[in-house]
Image (cartoon, rainbow, N blue to C red; front, side):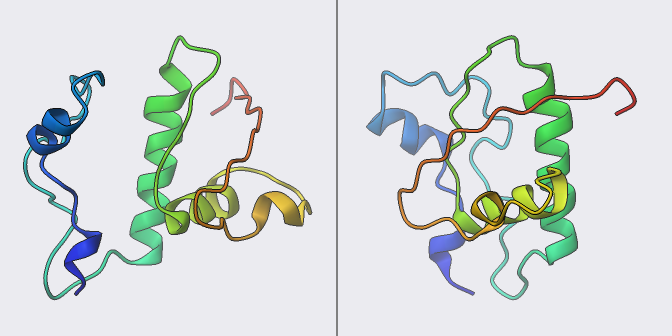
Length: 110
């Protein structure tokens, strides 16, 4: 497995970016999702994206949030979690450093 897929320790990122609050980073110093012999399955990634949306984003008080992550996670989130209908622009692969502004809403039944 490629070690570039492994998360950096939060302390290392905090030292490099002292102006960022890393207090909400729950994974801390080790990456429990990375292993030298196994990658996260598509279903596992979809489950993680669903949890991120329903347990984190949904409960944030802010109205504007930037989500910065890998293109595969964004692709999974837009195709397995969000209902984008037939909008191919939203469902397409994210290019490097691509920015998309979207408005999401949650129904009470979720």
